[in-house]
Length: 164
Image 1 (cartoon, helix red, strand yellow):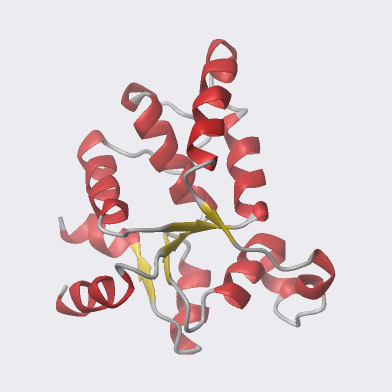
Image 2 (image 1 turned 90 degrees about the vertical axis):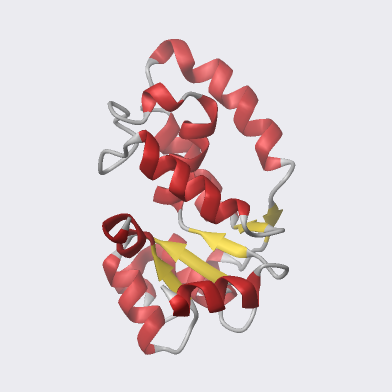
């Protein structure tokens, strides 16, 4: 945990780049915490205390950074919410998008990266944007390991979940 506190402090003002799976958890939890347990948009079930831990962690940063690719994945995943929630969630999502800071790289640039074949568009974009700029927050082991080996500051939220 001491490393995590140190790295959070280092990026508090610069910002956190949240991967799509955690961003959808965060947004669904803010929108309606009751949807966390049965939300098909989320790969693994999140309890309310785990969501609160995630919200506290993300709230420690002055800026939440995202990419068009992450936002597209969040939008698609949120489409798995119950039909009756689509309109209200999209209205909520629209407001949140206005508060996020968006960084982008062209799909052509991303696809030209060797790691694109393994990681795809969204994660490769994170790999291009984060180094030296932002802390990455993920729960995806392969992304976490790749960034760690490359010397990029990254936190795997599963490590925090398990320690809590």
